[in-house]
Every structure is written in C-alpha cells, then in structure tokens.
View 1 (cartoon, rainbow, N blue to C red):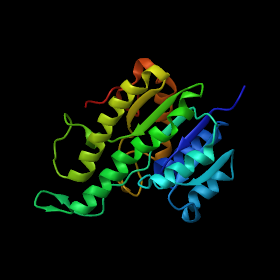
View 2: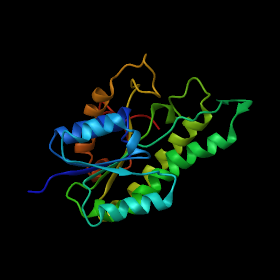
View 3: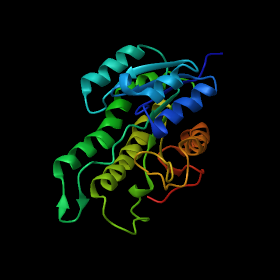
View 4: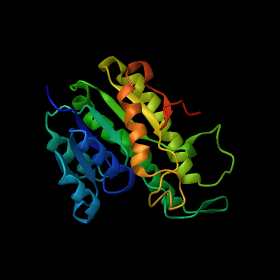
Length: 231
C-alpha cells in the first residue's frame, strides 16, 4: 500500500509548518512549498524528521506554479492544502486603505489557491483520497462579522470561500472533494501571541476534518473542531 501524499503551500512557518510536522509524523510523504526555502529554518528542521520534499513556490507567479507541477510530475497527491496566504501590510480601515496592498492580498489569497488547484487537479484526481483543503478564516464569514474593518483580508477569504464552492461543483465528477477550513484564532505571526490555539492544536483538528471530508462534505466551510462555520 502506497503512502498518503500531502502537498502544503505556505509551509515555512505557523500553520503551514505545523501541517508538515503533523503529516510527516504520521508517516505521510509531504511536499512542503514556500517562497524562500533557504530562509525557512523551521521547515528545514521539520523536513529532516520524515519523508519531506521542500519546493520553492510563489503562488502569485504562474511560472513558479508550473515549475512545482513539473517537479511533482505524475505523482498522485492525496491531500492538497492551500495554506499560503497573507494578511496585508497596509492599512485596511475605511478612509485609510492601501489599494496596492489589497490587490496583492487578493492575488495571494484568492487567485493563488485557484491557480494551484488548477495546476494540480490531475494529480489529486489520480490519488486515493482526492482532497483539496483551503485555509480560510472566521473573518471571511459574512454572518459572523461584528467588527468591520480588515477590508483586504476579510474580502480575500470570503472570495476564497466562493472559489471553494465553485471548485467543489466543477471537480465533483472527478471525485475530488474541496472544502474551506477555519483554523481558529492561532498563535502565529499573523494571529499574534494572545491567540487561543497553538498551530499544532489547530492542525490536529483540521486534519481530522480533512480525513472525513469526502464528496458528501465538499463545498462546505468547516471550523477546525469539525462543525460547519457560517458563510
């Protein structure tokens, strides 16, 4: 029986490297992707502990995505985790918005995952599990937005959720299940030190959701604890 193969984008730190650590520790083969592997010390340390292959990947660069697809070649990918994302460096409040930064957030958080899914769909379809998991955010929820602000990040993750629903419809005939995941408030560079969960705790929950996310669950938005999250 072949190993489960997992591909993780944005694998250099935080939730991404925790996914690599989790699946490598479970005996999976992991393709760990990030923009600058040479600077990803946490990933390099993790890669030494299991069957981990590190790849350079910039999800905003189509050439970089094609290079990744070529490096994977015809290897099936059981689980594709679109984790790469940015919060945005510029101001995102009404009347004070960095529009160039907003465009970069959209290219990274929305178009990037779509491009990766499009490039690797054949590899996912050729696998046993056929899962695409996309790391969204509770801040994407229209129903749960009580504070406003964070225009770039909120809009990008809400748009990602629509991409997930579209992909679920378009890829169903190929047996591919596509879900969005809310990781919770996680202690990362983006989440800050006052967050509620460690990256390992969040990933442990999300990995359980991914494992159970067959076609009957495709096109849905799940909390890391397993329940549906409101759109």
